[in-house]
Amino acid sequence: MPRHNIAFWNLENLFDVAGSPRRSDKLDRVLRSELSGWTQAVLDRKIAQLASVIRRLNGGAGPDLLGVCEVENRHVLTLLRDALAPLGRAYDIVHADTRDGRGIDVAFLYDTARFTPTATFFHYIVKRSATRDLVQVNFRTAGGRTLVVVGNHWPARSGGQWETEPFRLIAGETLGYFHERIREVHGEDTPILAMGDFNDEPGDRSLTEHARSYRQRAKVTRARTGAFLNLMWPLVGQAHGTHYYNNVAAVLDQFLASRSLLTGAAGVRVLPDTTAIVRFPDMVSGSVYPGPRRYGRGSSRDADGFSDHFPIAVTVDES
Image (tube, rainbow, N blue to C red; front, side, top):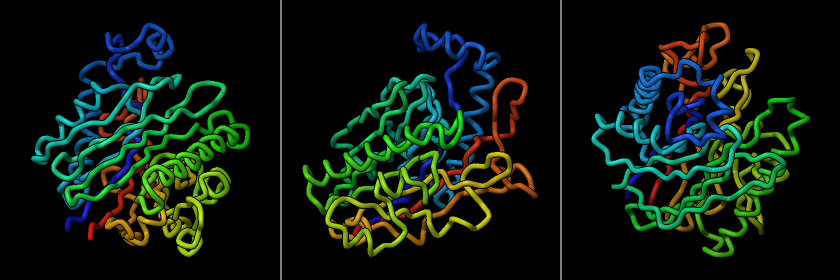
């Protein structure tokens, strides 16, 4: 049975071009100054930079399944998919425009030879101002197994970590709620992998108390209700993060694995020791504070940059 390489990456403002006809008038007004100078050539370079990293994932074979966030629409995802053509894979896209105030969404690219979506759900997070939905995709694997993935991009810390924490608590509750619903509908042994940019670290309340993601494997495998093992804990405190703010490393991008995915009860098992933060040398901005090299926008744009987050990856095995 195959092993699947699964990755997640916050692509940092992968917007369509300024003045795009694919953008609503309201969103165009919101983003007009932010997208000044965001021409087709600038977008094409951004796509090329992102694709150059994605093609190197999984030992140069590219990921079998890639979750992404901060993408504006299906058009830019199609451009990115087309830039992955040298891999010789038949990638397809799961995406839908949501109500986020900046128009950035969560999506998946998947190899159609390995995964077939059987159902897709967009779970709205109840918040005063609109934010990104949770994206749930139920996949049938090439081995005939079920794997449910849930893409997340929780509300940002802009405005202060503690001032905005309640919004992430709500997001954590939303993930926890749908974890339980998946178990009720599809069975307690349904393997579920949640992934994303949670804008909180593994030890924060939104993840531990509300999403019920833990550090101890036994706490998950012995739980009577839905719980996750946070696969990023072994990487916490090792000097490197997935995102840097004021030169301080944070592990904001994470994989959360359900009980069944740990035990392999349904024939799909995550290999926790394969979890990694991907940091190719050209992606790193400096030697003293080795954060991600951003592509950026406007006068701060770096044509040789990529994103303000590093990708993360993990391996899932079928038995």
